[in-house]
Amino acid sequence: MRRRRWLPPGLPRPPDDGGAAHLPGGRLPDLVLPATDGRAVGLGALGPGRTVLYVYPLSGRPGTDLPDGWDTIPGARGCTAEACAFRNHHDDLRAVGAARVYGLSSQPREYQRELAERLRLPFAILSDTGLALREALDLPTFTAGGRTLYRRLTMIVNRGAIEHVFYPVFPPDQHAGEVLDWLRLQDPPQGETAHDREGHPLSVPRPPR
Image 1 (cartoon, rainbow, N blue to C red):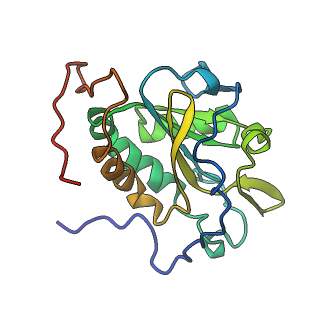
Image 2: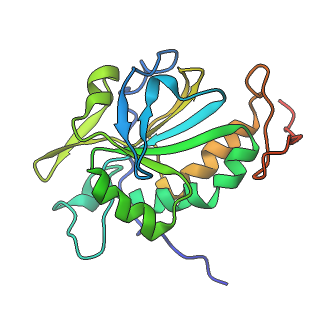
């Protein structure tokens, strides 16, 4: 069976401009954001265990045009493919210690909810229309179609602290696997154990270091 190609060939690779170098070791702010599942999620109180928080610029939807020149902006294309990859790897991520997964963009929750329902995402997307997280953490952004959008990055949060950052992210359709590989190499947070999808303790084989 031929593998489905999520992204067109030849997309420009985003450079590592150092825009996220200051993030590891910092803490998420006490910021509450609306989620596609109807909850309000407090970033400063995510709970025990590791959280995968992937930040992306803008997802498309059927019948809606993307900003002009979208495919020529390094790192812009691929938000839907990235979400699908996190969906497909969600159980695997949970099994190796991700207590929760969230996506985050500056799009309104109503717009994001259509994406979550259409793609049947098993996790919520957070809406940050005011770019409050950028202001709190100095996250990298870019401008397209007259809008300021987040650059694609992923933070691994452990007990409120930013343990690891993936930046730049490319290609986005393979990024969930990259996060999964990183988690497999980590020890579980102190006093915690990885669990399977039914919540049973799981012994996770880890490759030698």
